[in-house]
Length: 252
Image (tube, rainbow, N blue to C red):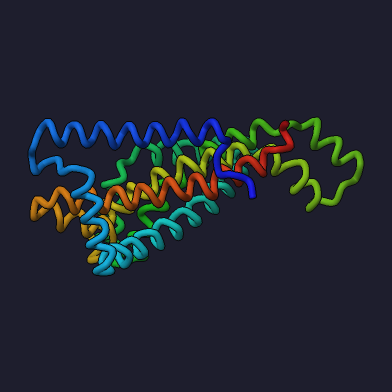
């Protein structure tokens, strides 16, 4: 089995994380304040919340919202981006809408979705997806514009079937842009999901963070934040990076 990281890169990342923990411990010792609990206190809180099953429960709910929102945004954004990159008239028609979508604050979209559709999961997921779709469209559109037309003409000249042309000629050129959209989307969507949960849901990491904020529970806030960030890092390392290397290995 291949390692998740190249050997040298893995040591660099590990050293960076250890340096972060050392800096955190030093600042906590220096300040001696409840506003910045030491790493041991926060990790102890993670254990307590895990044993009580509160953390796994809220984490699972949030991750489910992240996954559904992510897949929805990627599917719609990719389809629109390819279409806009291929047909100039459609690009001109939708470009104004795209600029508008990129500049509407996420908070406004979330509030409007809750007002229009109610305080439910459908409204929450829709609000998150709507905020991410424009950024996916922009990235994929640039990829569609960068497709090598000469390669497409060669495929046509050799009379390759459409499915084979799509999977062997067209999509491989688009993969780097799709991966860029996916990686940026993952980092953006989980942040918006927390805001959505904080404003209008009764469960999830965002809801718990709001509860901890009301009680000035800094250790709880850091515990839930670190666990969720760790999950995102694991997904990045175990799924997105290996997938990106596999999809783009033809370039080497």
